[in-house]
Amino acid sequence: MIPSPAPITTTRRKQVVATTTLLNRLRGSESLDEFVYNFGEDTREFKQVEAAIKPLRLELHALLNQQDVHVGIEIIDPLIFRLIRGGSVDPVGDAVAELNQQSFHEPGFVLYPLHGYGVMRRFRLGAPEIEDVAFAALGIAVVPQTQSIQKTVEFVERAASALGISSPIPTHALLQEHANPRLKWLSENPLMMIRVRSYAVGAYENQSEYMRKLGLGAALVMLLSVLIDPQSSGRYSSSRSSGETLDIRHYLVFENAGGGRDLSYRRVPMNLSATGLAQLSDLNVDLQLEAMAASQAVKDRVEAAVTALGDFHRANVGPARPKTARTRFAAKVSDSVYWFRRSFTGSGTDHEAIVSLAVSFESLLIDSYAGGVTARIVDRAAHILTAEGQPDPVVEIVRKLFSARGDVVHSGSTSSKLDLPLARKAYAVCLVHLLERLGRVQENTTTAVRDLLGDVRPVRPKLWERLAKAWRAFSYG
Image (tube, rainbow, N blue to C red; front, side, top):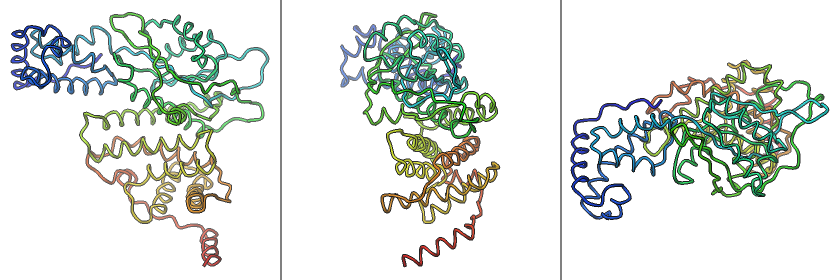
């Protein structure tokens, strides 16, 4: 249920009552569409009504956003207009009551195609089972290629149950859409289901929220792939196949239409560039589900950390939020996760992955740019990794990463063979460590990372590293 808002202020109530009187006096204002048509933006009447509706819309939008409910403006504005015209003295409170009565807070889902995701499975005869995995707290479920629309329907129904989606699903829509050659990805590609509490008239009103959650889901899968140690790889093989299609032009949205009806369904055209789409949907990882089941504590910890990131970003970043130092920090952490995901891109090179991963470390562990950035990153990473009980190779890989990054940036290549999976693991440990402490970030702090970690003592390089650096300086001097 959406909670009731704070009581309306006396000043706001007087403004609403005056607007009600105005609307009831005017002909041609029975609905918002009629009012806009009959009274142009330059009229005194329009400006008075707009001045009353706009703050109420922002208040309702902020209240819904706090509950992770996203209702489009083309629904909110006519609703508030109707309530004001009908004599409501508390339009926001009455709007919340109406949305609750219509069950708009009940979840639906987005079904999005992926590529480059699979699971490591044992060899067995016969058709493989559906090897999906759901993360209920974050609200996502993923499955490798099903190779069958019937199995896709089975996945959708099972994942919906796991994610707490109780509204009836029009599964016939999936069967119909699969007949469209543009939607063969329903069986030929891995899929991600994202739980959403949204309803909108426009196709793209809530797209930014969908894409943000897709990014969080992709990040969770990638983090688990590097943090959960696989069992013996010799007995397993990847479920990935070459049958995936890159001809992805739509995704599917199933939204709560209110009143206990079936989820409403629509096919939404992509309005992202090919590059943006690839960066969102390309996972390039395999999960070993048996190993993950044996590492439940790690899975739960990582999922809780990524969920905390989503909540922190939603609470601090948005059009209705004031821009504070904490807002900038929240955006910077999200940018760091974006660059981490970029390091997995299957179409990229190891050199690109090295630079992306170095940027992700810098965005995560540096409050602001100043001299000695690399040293501070290495020191802070070492502090976290040591506190998390990581072995020396994981601690030392961060220094090696930035050495390789320097080679790539300044000479275009590197001769060192960097262990990228180990470097990604080091980042993942640092990220989870910081995400678990987001609740301590103060509103106006400009030194959030330093506040969370404290003063970190520099870690002196090992003797052989100092000798190697001196030799390079001598050789090129």
